Image (cartoon, rainbow, N blue to C red):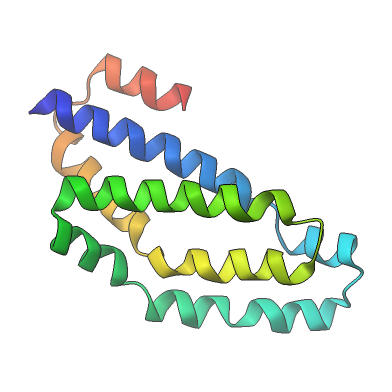
Amino acid sequence: RTNTMLRLNLIMFSTLAAVMTGASIDISFYISYHNIPQTTAAMHWFWKFPIAVACFGFAEKICKDLGMKKGVVSICIGMIILDILFVPFYLTSPKVFMLHQYVGLVVSGFPAIVRAIDARWFDQRLTSKFLSMKNLI
């Protein structure tokens, strides 16, 4: 059981690292590459926070409906597919970039689930193997 949870946790870390790479292309890229005025860009990004708060429970609902393991794996796969579909087209249109930013908010509560799994399974039993794998990712 611990090995399964360790593998699940490492999958989550690698998925989040890949997703954060796509998310690290931020508003400065949006402004400079697409020649969008800063005030316009700020208004485009303004709604991200309220929408993320409104969508916060979706990831938890997915995990409750499918079970924790299948739910987490499904969310990870969905986030990777989202990046594969959108990131290559960032340069084509600012609409593609913003659509990716907003669609990704649907699972805004996922990092909280990752931290909860971390705390539940590895808080008292941190192993050198786990820590070294986490640092590699």
